[in-house]
Length: 240
Image 1 (tube, rainbow, N blue to C red):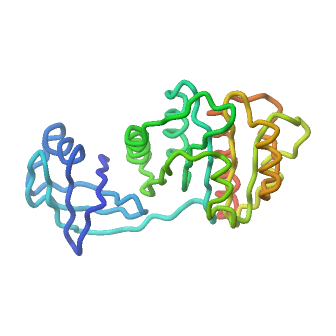
Image 2 (spheres, rainbow, N blue to C red):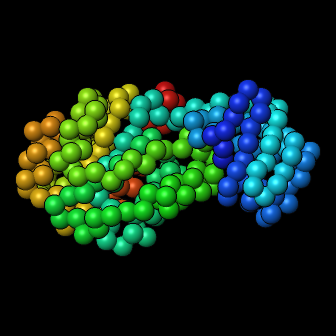
Image 3 (cartoon, rainbow, N blue to C red):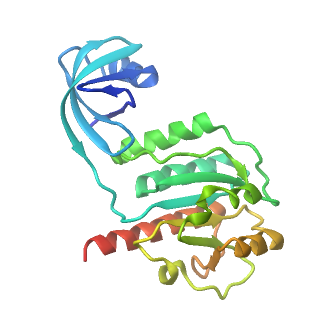
């Protein structure tokens, strides 16, 4: 099933534009009268009939709407230092979107080797992954922010705040720390790990150190392990 994304839905009408319209008309050759499936990025699934189709804009009539639901009770927010090789960070975004994540913030740390990202490209990767996996909730990608500034944001009120670092290999595993009915933020540092000062600052802001296993993981691997662990535990609570 081909899935198209739009955030232009008004009453019983919807519209595709830009790359979505071009792909619908020029690549898949859809015409007036065809039925297609839509997602709104907020969890909504739609079946719609094409009213008018050009390569710049596709007008549709909504035929049915079915909301989808998260497989977790609470929100997952990962704050991850982008990798020097941006393709590794892009891989993380793709896989985390497929697995299930609610919010992503790239953070700039003292030891970060990558200090700039291209958000438009990264959002396209997230959208493609959401459509491919039929995950109709599109996780927001926040602007890149310094870790010290991240601590000052409204996320300070998130009930569970964890940091995965390599300074101590005796930390308790995320599996034992995470409570699946509460929102969570997990910090994942750059290739050179968080600095001692950053780790200390995280503790002062209520972040609890956790382990992601006995192996020393790459940044993008650690982020995926954290994402999968939270989803696994969150899904298990819904089945009880």
